[in-house]
Structures are given as structure tokens and as C-alpha cells.
Length: 127
Image 1: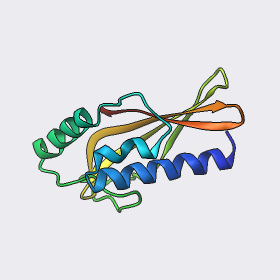
Image 2: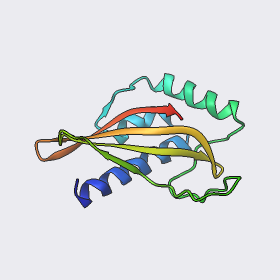
Image 3: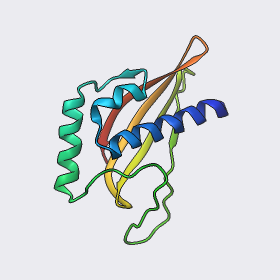
């Protein structure tokens, strides 16, 4: 994985977080090349249910300061996991709302294809 691939992955995460923050779930497919979890109504129901259940309003945009209690070090960090077979890499990003962890993780795949990088929305998974 080179720096341009890392930059594209981070930009993709930022774009998805912006869509999630604005609750425009139907726009998620425009942020990636493929949706493994393609039912945006189901995504909306799952996400909104989790937000409401935990008294959160909306997901934070990328880079919003965190206010966890108890305080510990956490940076809005995109975590990269390269595939052993060289086919690409996965990305995880822990979602927050109001600076607090939501215990949901955005999971994306980035696959090398014909000199390009295919961006795949995998899931938003409970932690």
C-alpha cells in the first residue's frame, strides 16, 4: 500500500462520515465503487436505531475531538489491515457521536484492480 492509496482510503472515510453525519444514507453508494451491504434503508434503520437507543444525535464528522470518560488516548484513526495475498487492504474506523464512542465500526475494503483501487463498503459493525 502506498501513500496515495492511504490518502484515498482516508478521503473515502471522510466522505462516508459526512454522509452519515447528515443522515443521507441513500448517498452512501456514491462514496464507494461497490456496496456489499447495499440496502441503504436497512443501514439507516440499523444506524438510527443504535443512535436513538444510546441517546446519540448523529455521527461525528472526521476529526471531531473526542471527550471519552474515563479519559484515555484515542485518535480518530483509520486502521489499515493489508491482505496477506497482496489483493488490497481493509480499513476500520470507530464511529463517534458528540465526541463519545458509539461502539460501531465502519469497515471498508480496498482492492487492487488493473492499476486502480476499488473502494468497497463492507459494513458498520457493532464493537
